[in-house]
Amino acid sequence: MQKILISSCFLGNKVRFDGKTKTLIDPQIATWQQQGRLLVICPETAGGLAVPRPRAELLAGNVAERVIDELGNDVTKPFQQGANAALALCQQQHIKYALLKEYSPSCGSSEVYDGHFQGKKIIGMGVTAKLLTASGIKVYSELTLAKLMSDIVNIEM
Ligand code: SF4
Image 1 (cartoon, rainbow, N blue to C red):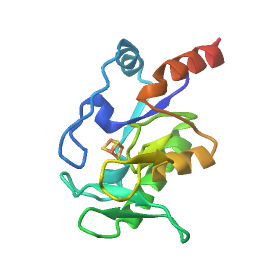
Image 2 (image 1 turned 90 degrees about the vertical axis):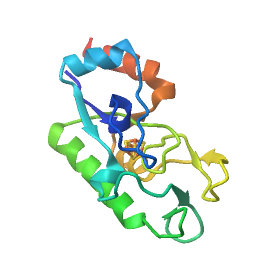
Image 3 (image 1 turned 120 degrees about the vertical axis):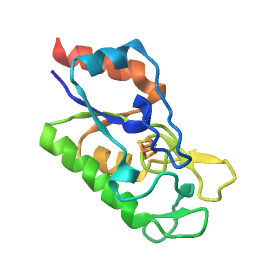
């Protein structure tokens, strides 16, 4: 039975920067939870960041990628620590699939905000999604949940 790493905020946990959740309501999530497949992490709190916390965005440039919060603080290190914690959990639990929140500077897997705090999205990956992908873990989002469901069914046939 394949295990799945899942963003904590999808399961109703109030771990987002604004102290809120992003509960993902889908019968499949409840089924996976009952089956004990889901391993939960919030990379940002795992990296030591508080709830609530200032909004953060990726600053991609010519130098190494950095994460800056809306107060101008460089929060790259806790983001990287959170990504490392997520990868360690995947390796300990032999997890090959992750369901992570799109657009997050940690969890986004297709698009993220552009670093100017003006609501503009660009193609890119959050710090955790990028590390997991580079490590051979398939990362999905709420927008590709159906694909994750079919991939899990196919691999377990
Ligand atoms: S880091 Fe990921 S799990 Fe944590 S609040 Fe943001 S999107 Fe949710």
